[in-house]
Image (cartoon, rainbow, N blue to C red; front, top):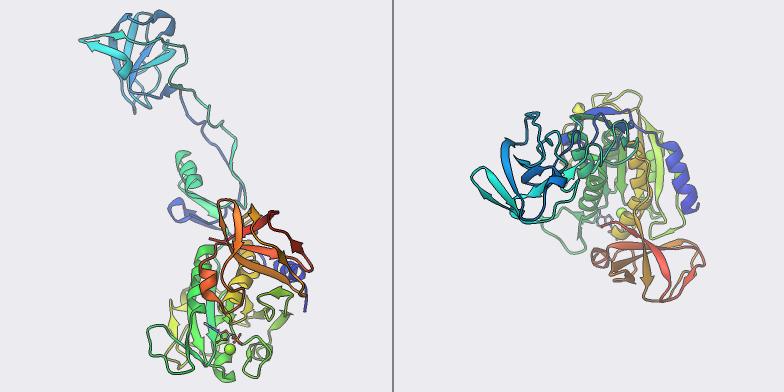
Length: 424
Ligand code: AMP
Ligand code: MG
């Protein structure tokens, strides 16, 4: 059993960033920039009005003063107007400032009569003008390599006239759930059987990370079917296998992987829940070889293929993550080990879950030999454990929104401020 830190280090040393690609900004949400971007234009690009109103010369204005309206400047076309003291130009939000004008009077603050206005307010120079470059200077960095493209980042790129971006590669993922006891949701449950929920969990988590789920299969605890399913899954950048990585006679994953020539770098990590976690890699000799049907059925009625694998780019190495079947273990190990690996492959700089400080509401002690991830609720700056802290307790997990890591031998007192990981 290795420590959680060693496991994470090993995984992150092993996986590599994928080649970058160019994408339209409309498809780049949550991708990671593969290069730095700099402002081509200052923002705003020219002095303009922040209001619908009148452009004026401030020192020729006073409350009760009458001004002659000489022209109109709409947004969208610079009429190159000029203004003299005692005059006003009708102007609209975003319209370029006329030469000589140094303030805008809001239309609500004037009384208009014919081609004259009376000013009903004091006017200060510079008022309601958006100055060129006050938000952003030309050449300033607007997006750093490895940064995530958020809605506002995409808007900023668009405002610079940029319509496509170079971002990190897309991670293609396959999910393989194993277990004789599992039944696909929607089907009839016989005594002793349970519904298969990890595929749904992993698909959602992968989606959240920005990975493409290309194949979702279920496989019985049977060596032959397992090997065939792994061979299909390994055509993706990553294959996530749920269940079958523990030490029972029905836990066949490790041996099946070794038989297929996989390097198993990690098996069993000092993390609770999630101890049986496995990480390895399989080298594809030639992609889609030996007459294998991409994403085909395994003979189980629970198989589900999302998209034909022959449309995928052909990765040479598939990274395998074997997650324990218990849903909370699968969840925690995904977030601690799979998520950072995917983000690194996608070109991200920050691989950590966001953390927030919170006041702990209970005493907590970890006397075990593994780092313990407590599922809890972060609300109004306080963190409280929720539900049963057991690896099968999916309801408890569903009520939580944050994880608190209790290191080996660590004791925390109610009232202490702790950092918790937010995953919601
Ligand atoms: P395993 O890791 O295969 O030994 O499974 C551990 C526990 O997780 C068992 O109680 C399984 O029934 C349960 N389990 C395994 N896979 C899944 C799954 N895909 N969905 C829900 N529960 C599962
Ligand atoms: Mg099992």
